[in-house]
Length: 505
Image 1 (cartoon, rainbow, N blue to C red):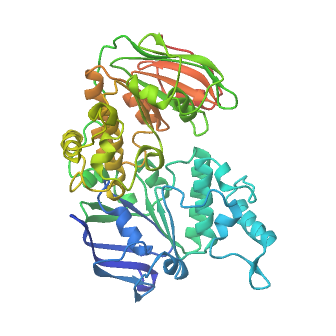
Image 2: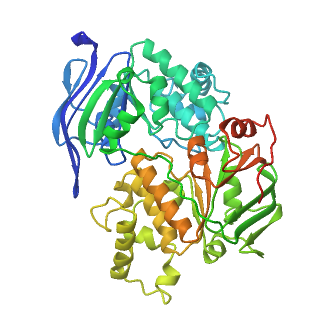
Image 3: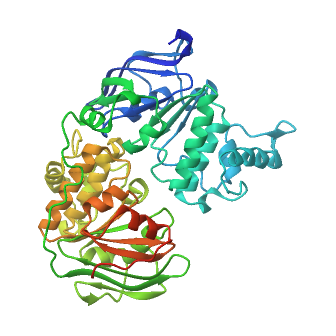
């Protein structure tokens, strides 16, 4: 490798946050025209490392060399100016602005030196959307798009900056398969132009499709860097977690009990139609479908967040006359939303307040809230779920994604929920934490809890479900018992090319 092939050299990077050393002397190198994959469990330091390169955080020790010159990145705007762009897992955009305005932020074409040339702005945006083969109108407000489309707009914005270094932090977590293929095609194209790409993902199977080299971090330290062609998935997992994971989906058989939840004919125009689902105590019921199938929308209806046009909900055999989040929680329903940062947590509050916030009526019936009692309760769930935090006073914004997800789960366990709706419970979570969550699901079902697990990861839904339903375009297109489910059958139902009704409710 020629010395001038190196785009970025990060040497001895150290970063401390209150109570924790996030990075401890990490070395990392990125070459021109390569996709360098960065992996590790949540809390390993991946996002911290790339945020230092992107100017979000300053470093405490170490050096950054960019194109052969030692560089100090003074902030996100400076990073963009020197050719470093980043795409985050959650779109970092403005919903009320148009797609074109989001793509051109800080680089708007001007007319007369101070007026934005809207026509040229839309034309520029259309060019890059066409390059990505995206059927998106650049003049529509971003907030009208799906989460996956918004993520692709984030990607389009990064490409519009013509970066030398492109950082992709969990870019495919909210994308449909077609969008992933569009993104990968664009990555291969810009890689051929000499752009260096840092790629972070917990979807380990996709790394071999797109990556050249891989660096593994664990507990804030560099473990190893190697060519992906010289390793395999099991080796990567062992390096990430420091141990063998003998069984990725450790579902333990439980004899189902009485009916916990029944949906009959749930319908909302344009969202879902005639949804019939049964979940029993002690059972994990999977719900699989492609992005846009209507799974999350259906879950929001069940929890009373959105209205329904027709249909009935039965809880423990009794029809529910009034659906609202408060009523659902009082009936023992818990809802772990797919968007934990916006809907599942209050990011500025400490762990203790997030853990108890769904249980305030029960814990403090006279509304005399005791921080000491909050801490006592929080410590129980911090220990029970192995939440990695310096203390219960730590704001959840500073926890890793996996630990944030554990805090959301702790909310509903604290509330005494015995019917949990888990919407993408392991999205953006490392393999070790995934197994911890699966084992926790086993413990809960052994205690009689019923779980409806919504997932777009086929191995997960097949590995952990006792029964599973498949949705396509707002309808149930398949129902399978554990022994009947095959990948071919499920995918056919998810694409709507085959309608199958198997298993018994």
